[in-house]
Structure formats: structure tokens, C-alpha cells
Image (cartoon, rainbow, N blue to C red):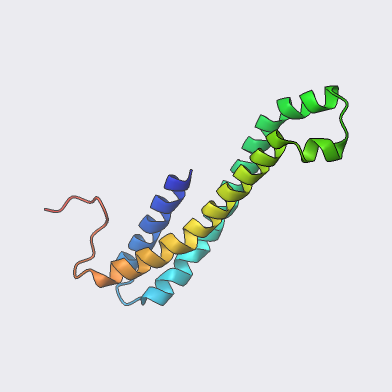
Length: 121
């Protein structure tokens, strides 16, 4: 998912630069972040649904064991999953502005606008 978001973000900035050759890196960044907010929202929704679905069996086990909510939330299994989720979400949210900034800077530093991976003939 992270790879998809970053590649699409860079591609969007590159396309905007091709469409408006006079756009500054700052303008490209601002426009790219408009798209990036949608990428972040979509990815966060996907993460939430994936984690909710994968957490159902473990929550069922905790419910059947009749442990208190405090015991469940402070258990090693739940703590590890919460930390993983948090780190993944932070990486995902930070990847969009970083990728957008790098793409905006790189696209304007090249002498000829070429899409990454495009055929150079």
C-alpha cells in the first residue's frame, strides 16, 4: 500500500509539471498535496478496515476468556498490534508530503521533463 501511494503521488506531480511547465516546485507541492490528502484518507480507511477485520478473532478470544478491558488492552498481543498500527499509519501519513516534496523538487531540477520509467527514445 505504501508503495502504491508514493508511486502514484510522484506520478501525479510529474503529470502536473508536464501539464503546466511554468508551475514552481511550491505550486506543484500544493497541488500534489490536494491529491495526497485523498490518498491518505483512502489508505487510512483501508488500514482501519483491515485491522478491524483481523482483530475480530483475537477480540473474540479475549471476550470468551472473560478478562477485563484493562487487562486486554495492556496485554502484549494487543500492545504490539497497536504499536504496529500506529507506526504504519505514521509512515503512511508522512510518506505523502515527503514524496510530493521530493517529486516537485526533482521534476524541476531535470532539464527535460520525462516521466520516471517512461520510454526514452
